[in-house]
Length: 423
Picture 1: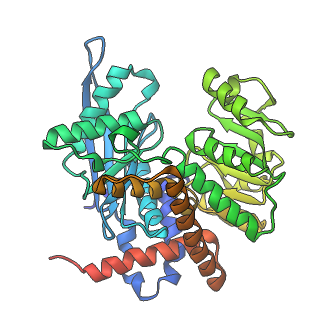
Picture 2: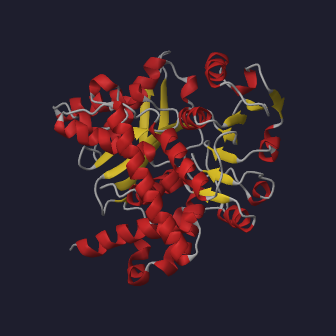
Picture 3: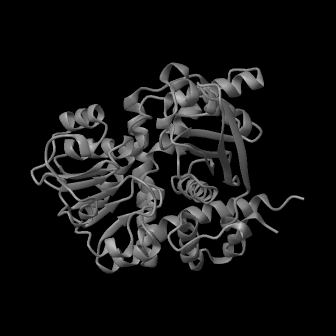
């Protein structure tokens, strides 16, 4: 019996959302559809126990995961998140979206993802390090520079990647900088990586705005999730003349029709630990975020945020998915019927993995590029990928999401077919 049979995905679960997205693309895969079951079954799923000694001498156990969804096009690539709600099903969906995302921008990677069910804010720095190193040792049997390359995700950062790289290197007896991306610069990290995902959101948003005749100068932007992705995207939109009129995180929601000033706002968010605690603008009920008057909406928090009910209330003309899986399939239909353009996560937030690819390449060659070179290369890849997807959408008269899946899944399944089955 497959371990998939033990899952009971609900209508709002990430894995259910992903499977529904795959089903919608099947009519556009032609003869490759015979391989479609490949897309619905992760290649490998690892569940690990992560025991560590706490600062008080007690022993705590955490549950960790690493899922490799598909490796037909290359080694696995995907982040590691630390969050109290992490589950195997969520990590499976995130790894599958990584498969599609890498193929959508034509990177030589498959999809993978990892996570630990933990609230990292409750751990000391030493406890966090011990947990990270133990987790890395446990998943060390399936990761490696040519096998599976982790990266930062929710609640993980360059320091955690440094611990992962060092642990893997100590266990293999060689300094393997390419085993993770998103590392500190002096350990083989890449310039431009920190803001790459947010930059990708901006670049695809800029191109989409041009397509629908929206002028960014004066455009009103609302962002859910003012972490690395949301804040970076907001900053670039403001630089382009747009106004950040609403923002939300786990601490609250603030609106300012005149627009927030980015430097002071981000400083206040950092200093006061969240939007709900800062001054400026009006603090409103979290659910009222979906009623805010705006032109561009950037969901950059958790998956499953845009439900059909919320989709009916959104006033934006353009939705840019900075988060993975923020829109439920039924909500997608509602937005489409209302004429709201959605740039899907699997292309919109692919800037991060694209610059992770640049970092990986630079590590192998030990030759590093300037930030300007990184940004130019990133912008070209994102623009070219979106153009192909848009052409596919126009040809078949389908949504950008289904078109992205069509382009990506064709590449994945061609690789699967050409490699064949062994033995």
